[in-house]
Length: 257
Image 1 (cartoon, one colour):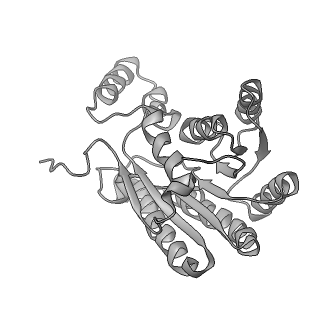
Image 2 (cartoon, rainbow, N blue to C red; image 1 turned 60 degrees about the vertical axis):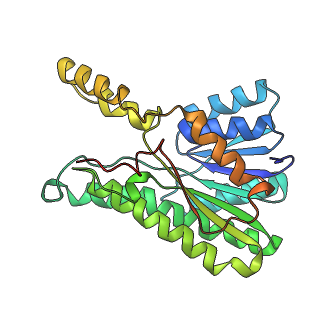
């Protein structure tokens, strides 16, 4: 799965799946643009990559701000001359409430980051890929974009939207050698998941939630998702376009009463 000399633009690159994917691709000789709103962790990730001999750089990027997105895209192109792969991965979990209890501002924030952020990145990167005459986009959705959990309406809605956005990119650019695919991970040991218990103030409740999450049978290590990202970023996945890759150890296939 050759990614040698490919320039990979990763949002949410300072931690979690984004950072781990960058490490995997970088160790396979890709050039990695770590894009994130988190400057502290982003610069630390850059240092870690460079210490391992990976050609990488951190670029500050607020995916909800088109000017910030365009600036990050331009900086990456100025440095490496191209963007071969865009891994659009930044996202938040959003409110954990029934619909009637969700504050509209929280609903809008979840869509602003999870959906609009991917749209803005794709819009600006696709302009570069059109000029190049080729490109590859990978979008992080979730298995909760295909099935719902209680109190997760905002998150599930955004992740469902991302599946269709990815398919729309695939259809719109199929004749320009630009493809797009969507990954739909189940629960993964990342800061997005661990935050579910870290934000709980009551120690007893925090311990209960932590134990429940860590005992989910399908809870995955980050590397189990990263392997799919590596495949999709490589030319080995050339025939795949507009596909949805569910990575959840069979959780999506199981009927839960």
